[in-house]
Image 1 (cartoon, rainbow, N blue to C red):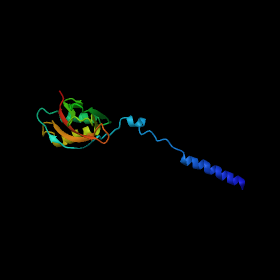
Image 2: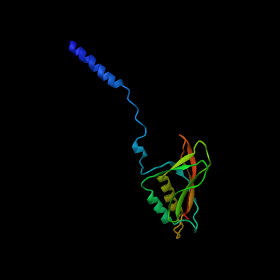
Image 3: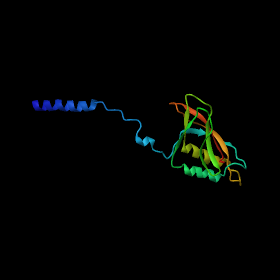
Image 4: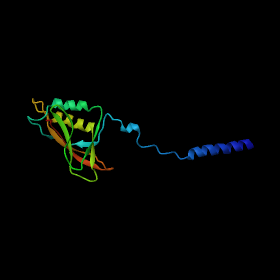
Length: 162
């Protein structure tokens, strides 16, 4: 009987201490968080405006951009001086972004590959000139900013790469 009581106390001690022992919080960032992801969405829904002309890039070149970035990617873009940044290009087609205004709370914003791909694909579907095979467009979307919980309005455009 004494042996059972001792065993019970020992079991309670061991199990009780394993249930109450502090467990360190896992690191919220693992090495996998830094690997490129295939589908990165850093921005919300976009608006689209037609800017197609005889000088616009070839839609086929813009679709090569779509293919080239299909395996992932994210661009961190400074916004301190509100300058236009050309992010990707191929042949006659270029894609750029610019923040709506400088802001000390969001000195940078992020653009994902799927944000760029969606803007280009939808622009080609909507505005490719009949017979010309050219497309030009611009729009706006709201993207993740540099400060926690702070987003940013970003203007994008598809234009001729010179």
